[in-house]
Length: 165
Image 1 (tube, rainbow, N blue to C red):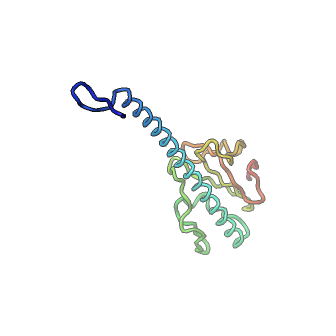
Image 2 (cartoon, helix red, strand yellow):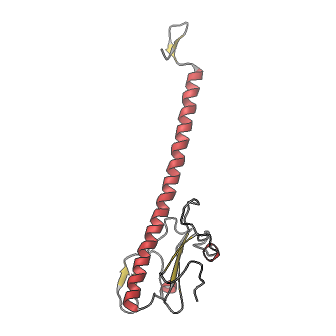
Image 3 (cartoon, rainbow, N blue to C red):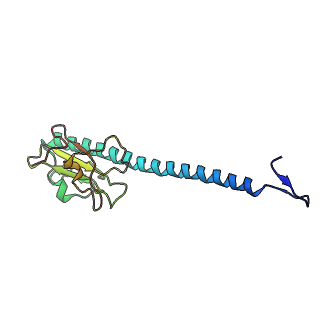
């Protein structure tokens, strides 16, 4: 039997048995909580990467229509706002992506002065992510008010290490 009977005829578990069960429950809950936090972190990073890929497709659509990337984007538009061409009124995106950790972290878009190249930066939370960049052109830039960028993508004719003019 799992329980003991005392002198008064009452049955129950010993203190040692209860403590072992509580320790096992504590260990299991710690493992589950840790996995849950990591899952949320990876999900936010997956969303960031998906948003950046969507932004890349939008930039290429704009390039195909105008022969260059938008120079007005970095000054006149906000993340979370619609991406509308101010000259033609064409909507390229109903809403520009917002970082899941907004406002502490944001995306950063740089377009060359000749409008033929761009770089798009973000900060991913998972430090073990295989796509994290260690290039100084990426890691010295701020993505928001508190985070340095550590993830970058570019137009097909640019590189991550290139400083756009």
